[in-house]
Length: 220
Image (cartoon, rainbow, N blue to C red):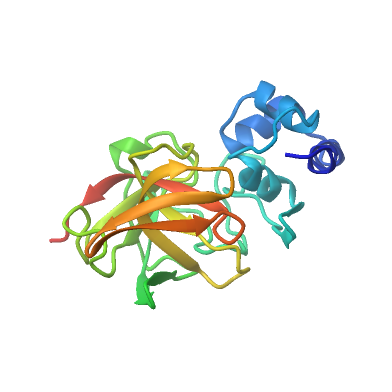
């Protein structure tokens, strides 16, 4: 993390009228981490993409323009044209949105709008912005089979040994991958899949967003 990015973070945060605590809450980190980024005390931060998204500032030469998840004054999740699909929409009370996906060239393309809603599962109790995606392809089988629902918690930090949805930075394209995170590194995500078994490196400049999958609902 360089001073130029840290200065941009501070300027954008202050322009929004946010405190360091508010920004930290928006991206799921601590006030001290935000302070270290703004002061240029860390060479690289794994939360940089989330900070850039929340503030709408450039990261690695790419413009990220919308906060995830968007917040309304009442604390509920509102509809927004989010550049990395799916967009978060207001769900009926006690429910979360469910999104369809299709497989293409080893990636998944996620629909922008939900096709259904489901009862909010226990891992997402009290969590804003949670959602579910229909699993397509068998690269993560037998852990996740086609037709299963992957329950996604967008606020948890990346943790080695967890299955995650990685979103590409192509604005509006809806490109994503579902893989097991082996190790987060400064410039890449080291990931693996089960079928066929192999490890991959995802460039974090191309795949800046990582959302943790916290549960599986088996297809009926």
